[in-house]
Length: 129
Image (cartoon, rainbow, N blue to C red; front, side):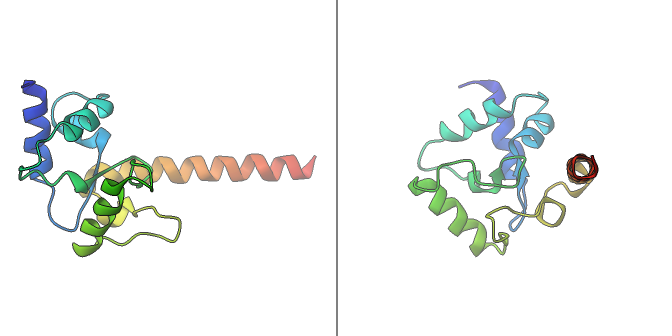
């Protein structure tokens, strides 16, 4: 098996119950920043009888990456809810509340806030002209 997959599994095993990590954060903690897709491939390659809490890994938008019609997406949501993770009405998890490790999401939340502010400014500018 791929040694990087083992490092990914080790990181995911450290995500505490009731918390989530993004694919990108897991990749960075496993020693390969930018390898978020590889994290997804590693988790999908897990055998049925494993002790890796794969359901605690979500995308950078705080959402489950699987299609809502996929049985594993329903299972992932149910497992997270059972652990106390709350989903917003739009289906996203608040990474500033549930993200692990917490310090990894300070910059993510700040960047999302700046992007939203920038989009809002552009919309308002368009209305003024």
